[in-house]
Image 1 (cartoon, rainbow, N blue to C red):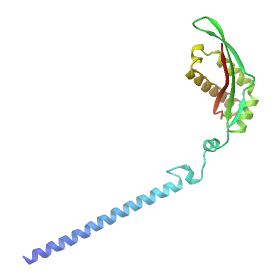
Image 2 (cartoon, rainbow, N blue to C red):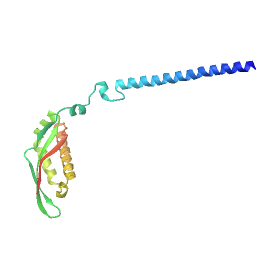
Image 3 (spheres, rainbow, N blue to C red):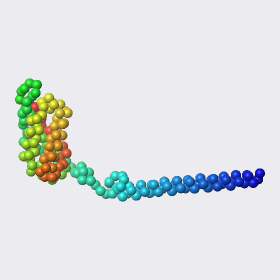
Amino acid sequence: MAESSTLDAETRNGGGSKKSLIILICALIILLIIAVAGALYLTGVIGPQAVTGEVSADAARTNQPAIYHSLDPAFVVNFQHQSQHRIRFLQTKMEAMARDQEVIEALQTHMPAIRNTLLLLLSQQDYETMRTVEGKERLREAAREEINLILEAQAAVSGVEAVFFTGFVMQ
């Protein structure tokens, strides 16, 4: 009988050292995972790019102050009002916004092509759509896209971030 109680005590002690060994192995695995993740984070494989000191061109551009360029003179176009078969007129003044002086210079250089495209765009608009805020916002976005397409084709730059209406009269 004394022999079996000695075996039970040895089994309990041996079992306890196995649990300690498993806990130690788990702790080492967790430390290894943390070390690998930290190394990947510091090398820039995971995490934000700012840790490695790299700044993308877009991020650098958004840190620059806005530069506004007026698309003078005002645009005046006529278009037909669908329901009344009457000729309507639109006079609008616009400004383009970029953050790079190179884009502004390209905008000035290619102004004849830009104005032509914008005049065509404006004359294709629907009177009822242009009466709504949503219609005006879509037109602003379409104008920005058209300007950037011209700049990309003619000067291999783009970067007009927005087009703003500074005057808008329809009759």
